[in-house]
Image (cartoon, rainbow, N blue to C red; front, top):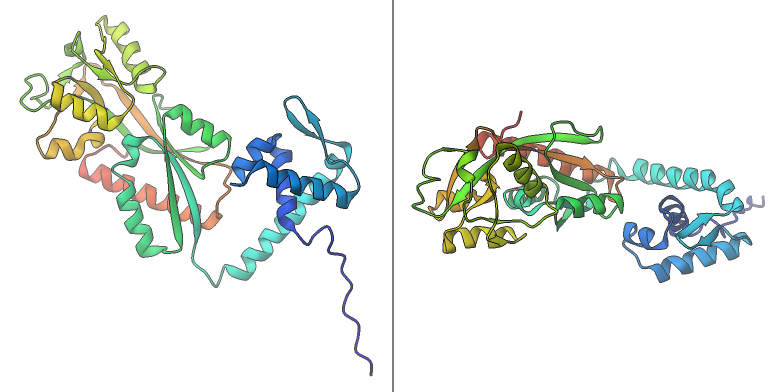
Length: 319
C-alpha cells in the first residue's frame, strides 16, 4: 500500500516569523527607529525584512510619511491576522517549554543610580541562586530618561521616584523614602538624627541641576517655607555629590540608602529632614515587555523582596 503523501504546506509567508515580528513592531510603534530599539536590532535589517515581506505579499504594507510610517490598507487588513499568528506561535512555544525549563533570558531594568546601588548586588545573588538562566542588564539615568526608555520599550522593568503618593494603575508601590541632609564628618548641623527644613537656608549645597525631580521638590518647598537654596555646585553624578560633600565640606540632600555605607563608615553624616518632611515614593512598573515574560515576573518578585529587606534594615519604609 502506497503511504500517504505528506501534507503540503505553503511556508513562504510563515517560514520566518521574525519578519512578522518586525512588521508588528513597526505597526505598533510607527517608526523603524523605535522598532529597531524595541527589537534590539538595526534599521537596515528591519528595512530588509519589511521589503522582503512586501515582495512576498505583492503589496505595500506601509506608507512612508514625514513622521515615520503608517499602515497601508493592506497592512491594516492583515494586522489582526499577524497578531494572532505571533500569539499562537508564542503560546505553542510556551506550552512546549514551560514544563521543561526555569525562567530564563535577558531582563533589562531602568533605574535611578541611588536606587540601583543598594539593590543590584543582592538581586544578582538571589537570581544566580534561584534562576541561573536569567541575565540582567541595568540602564541608569534620570527619571525623565527612564520614562523615555519605558516609552521606547527599551526596558522591561522601570524603578522610579514619585513625589506624589498617587501612582498610575501600571505602577506598584515599593517603598516610601525620607530625604536627609547630608554633611561632612564632624558637622554640627547633621550631628543630630533630625534637622528642621528651615536649617537648610543658605547652606553651601551641591545639588543636581534642573530639570530634576528632587531639585524641583526642594525648590518648591523652599519657596513655600521662604528660605533660600542656592547651590554653589551643580552635579547630576551621585558619586560626585558624595565625594564633594566629604572633601569640600558642602551639603546635599539624598535618601539615606544612597549614602548608607558612607554613613556607617563615618565618611558622611545624615540627618532626616523634618518640619516639613520631604518624602518620595519608589515605584516599579512593568513595561510593554520585550523580554521573556516569566523571567520578567521572577525578577520583579525578587525586587519586591529586596525592597522589603531594605525596609527591615531601616533604609526606607515599606508602607
